[in-house]
Length: 131
Image (cartoon, rainbow, N blue to C red; front, side, top):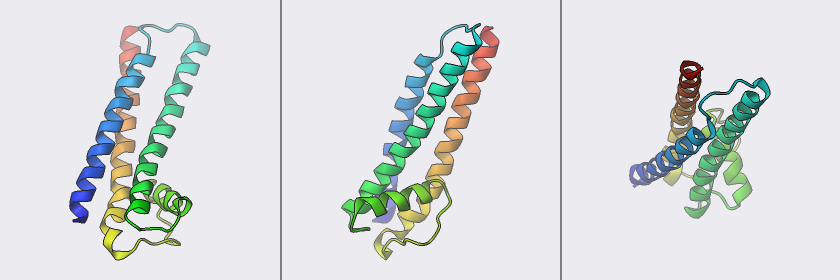
């Protein structure tokens, strides 16, 4: 059952990340010659990257809370952020019925961080080719 839930969560993350990718593509204008404007665009993209990862970790946290992994949302968010970032301190543990999902969350976070890296590199290459 954990693998089914994991597949559902991963599918949700792909949908969220796809929508985010489409959004940031609209932030990038054709040609930017003003350095300040370019920096502001890159700041907006970077902040949106951070926020999208927080939202995705929060989805895992709400799932853990809903499935009785933690008794409060704050602990679920803390665990999820640590796991999603692949830090996984080990000071808070999931019950056995959610451990596979908890362990896989780090892999999901790493994959989606790679997606962000790919998206930012694509934007950089696209912009440099248009300049």
